[in-house]
Length: 295
Image 1 (tube, helix red, strand yellow):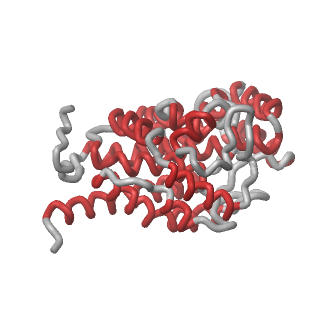
Image 2 (image 1 turned 90 degrees about the vertical axis):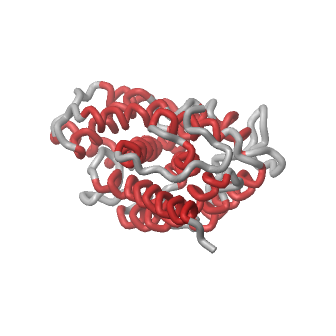
Image 3 (image 1 turned 90 degrees about the horizontal axis):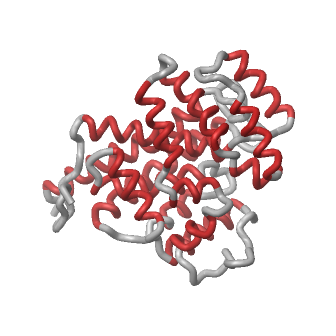
């Protein structure tokens, strides 16, 4: 029999899932240099791929949110279930699953970020098994053996993988470090320096790319190219004009370079903003049994 607590929790997790899925749709709807948007598809991903992937993730975010309320792992099985060769939001999902899980025991964005980072390093070997399956479905081969760990080893935990990967992978680093760039994106959107949501997101994209060489660029085109692109972004002024963004976009497209990891972080920052609005309106689930929001 459904209780009032379970109904309220289900309603809350539905709202979380809607906001997280919407974050990717909003991110992709705003034209940004080198990324798919309503103005352009790129060689490796189309706008339709992103939107379809975001919609498919909605139920996964909902179930991960419920598991967070129950403090139950694993969660990466929900990622594997929606993954196929056309799935285009692996990095975004990796960033947002711990956020979905932590949303039921967080009271504000600051606490949400802290809890999500803690949860990520507690993910289990079961989570790693399911994440490896998602990688296999996508036919991604960049995870292999290093001098310190074999990432194909089934016995390690997902938390261990993230900690080791943080040395060279931008998304893993972002999660383990406590979402610092995602938080800066959130702050830019909230402070509204450029006068509109779209302009703020475009500036946040340039800002993040200037601060951190893009992980996808580094893996596909080499770290020196990623550094060069980051340096180019650092020369673009705050709240850039469309002509400045178009010149940068033309440069990236002519070389088929896609700052995909930066787009993942932008989506995470938008997600924090969207969930922050829920918290600001005091929309929260009942406390899990034995929990106290003040501790």
